[in-house]
Amino acid sequence: MKHVIQRLILGIALTPLVVPPPAAHAEDAVPGPVFSDSGPDAADYGAAAGYQPGTLQTAARPEHLVATYSRFDSLVPARKVARAATPWSFRRAAEPAISYTFRGERWPIQAYLDRNPATGLLIAKDDTILYEHYQYARTDRDRLLSQSMAKTITAMLVGIAVAENSIKSIDDVASAYVPGLAGTEYGGTTLRALLTMSSGVSFTENYDGADDIAQLTRDLAEGKDTAASVARFNTRVAPQATRWHYASSETEVLGLVLRAATGVPVADYLREKIWQPIGAEADASWVIDGTGQEWTFCCFNAVLRDYARLGRLLAYDGAWEGRQLIPRQWVLDATTVRAADGHLAPGTATPYFGYGYQTWLFPGEPRRFALLGIRGQTIMVDPASKLVLVHTAVRKKPSEQASYAEPIALWLSVVAQFGK
Picture 1 (cartoon, rainbow, N blue to C red):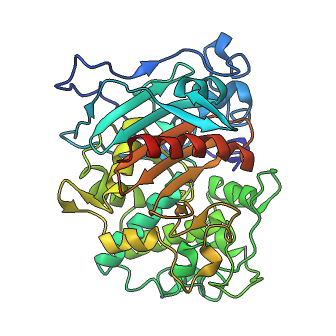
Picture 2 (spheres, one colour):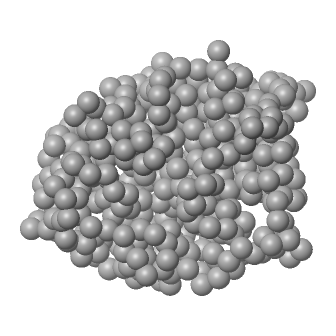
């Protein structure tokens, strides 16, 4: 979504965010991350000027995208998600030869980076990093923008809140927790339907600057009441739980429910329940609106290895080093389509992906899933092999179906090579 080209009111001071130097590893003799000052179309992305940041009005221009997608929390108000006191460290193996098949040809992984505007690409198997490369002068200390990958984080926090009985049931309607939504279509929608983007409420999200996501973004940026901002979308065009339709407004409602049910800001809940328990090495941040509410549909910021830690947590179905942080059954439910929910199945919800609880589902067996965000943000997870791929990028178009083909080809080849 074109968040960065909307006018934001910066009336809230940012808490300083600290990213420490990378933790030392016992395997220091093994090569570490690989950094490049260049990347595909580097001149278009402002290489000559050092990938300079723009203003809020110009941040979505190609020459500013690299800085926008690695320093977003310096442009807008954000709440800090503090790192762990003692970071958990990945092991690191010597970088293996990685290749993939795309359009009938076999390519080395470097060819992928040569053609795709990835700012960071990391592949890990369980506790070991196999590959970690950065482009466009980005490093392992840059907090990279999640875009809609934050939706999956929100859904996992809902699962924790259900386990703690802060949320009684996902078959409750949203207005049971957010009185400001009483009498509205979203207020009368169950949390289950919101989790699966199946509210039936009309909402447009095509990133043309005149759609509903642009209106919602403006409202939140200008400090308008968050519940009132989502309540303006109040036309039901299909019965809930019958049709999948992508709508960031539904995640924003879930964020309001989380805040009301738990009594703490969403970023603080994440810090306590997930971020510090997985041993995050760096402070993260989550963009907040003018009322202090997190934009739960987007705009989380973290270093690449911490995204990989999150992916590893999900690969273990919510367990971390023997401790269950997210209920296992919740993660299974979030990444599986029930027989009764055919509208969410791969090939039906979208031509390729299915949809779980704010999570994208690969077709076929075994169970694999992804967190996705516009312009190329993704975390892909294979629980069976504990493989995780983290990919951050600065694609010039916000959303383009064809752009998923090569990352998916790379991922499927990685699973075929290293998944045993």
